[in-house]
Amino acid sequence: MSHPSPIQRRVTRKIRVGSVYVGGDAPITVQTMTNTDTCDVEATVAQIQRCVNAGADIVRVSVPSMDAAEAFGVIRQRVPGVPLVADIHFDHRIALAVAEKGVDCLRINPGNIGSDDKVREVVDCARHHGISMRIGVNAGSLEKDIQKKYREPTGEALLESAMRHIDILDRLNFHEFKVSVKASNVFLTLDAYRLLSKQIDNPLHLGVTEAGVFRSGTVKSAIALGGLLLDGIGDTLRVSLAAEPEEEVKVGFDILKSLGIRSNGINFIACPSCSRQEFDVIRVMQALEARLEDVRLPMDVSVIGCKVNGPGEAKEADIGVVGASPKSLVYRHGEKSHLIPTATLVDEIEKMVRERVAEETARQSRIIVKG
Ligand code: SF4
Image (cartoon, rainbow, N blue to C red; front, side, top):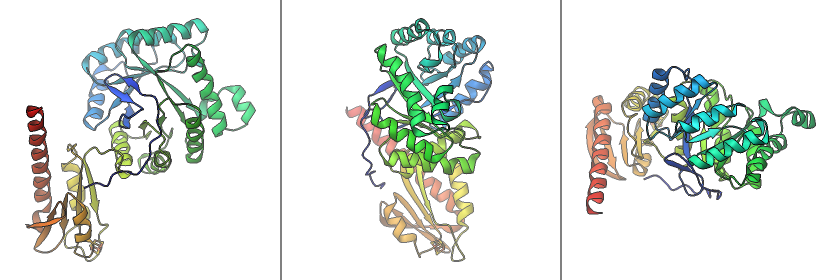
């Protein structure tokens, strides 16, 4: 029963990162980055798997050395089908090595590779293997002359830096790339992306770099990325948190979910609770969130502590529960349905959600058989 998003998305070129598309009419993708030692293949593969289970569309892996490139080759084979980006700085030989090992996208700035020959070699190799690239500009590592010219990081400074790298790829007639202009400051982030979106039609990778620890970084990212997404800017995003990468993925989807752009599971609607609550709303919601983390079917589930706001919210949800004692009232698709024991709300709501998932799975299979 989600309301469609009124956001008009800016039209961008569509590029491919392995099995997913970024830009154009493709859904806005959520990505993250591993924080394990890439040479520790077991740990990195396990982390990638956890990120994919959390819903990650794309996973970036840092490849700082030729040893890491070797390990990347093994990781690639262990997670077939997962779109992988290799994060490389300066050394073009690493880019060539991971290209041979099946990378889907190179995060590398052409202006930092060195001679024209090296840049051309990387671009030819990417073209040959159907690999896309990401240009990533960060406010904290702008070129010295740009720092001098602007004195401090500004939107214009980030734009100028990005355009230098973009021009190099344009001159080589390579257009399969996306661009990020990240800063840790919300206003700088908004400014830089808004300026860049007026200059190019390549897809934009959104992010607030070094956003911080989980809570404050989430808020900062939600404001900056939310502001850009409301402007229709952004084709893929990463929430950078000092937290486990799978948490970044969940926050990324929560931002998209809040704007009605893309859902990855349940959109919970719950009241903050007060002395009128007929059950312990906070405890019930914590339990439900943990139990239903694996559900990917988009649905609105409203769980409200009493009849003051319960019916209004329940009518708008796919499944709605209005707290009362000893039995709470369930709404399905906006209509009153039945009563459930309030003492076992978590079990009852989980059961209804899983039944809905099973019904939808059966419906999808019937469509496939008929098709
Ligand atoms: S819906 Fe009821 S329990 Fe929840 S905050 Fe409002 S008055 Fe309190």
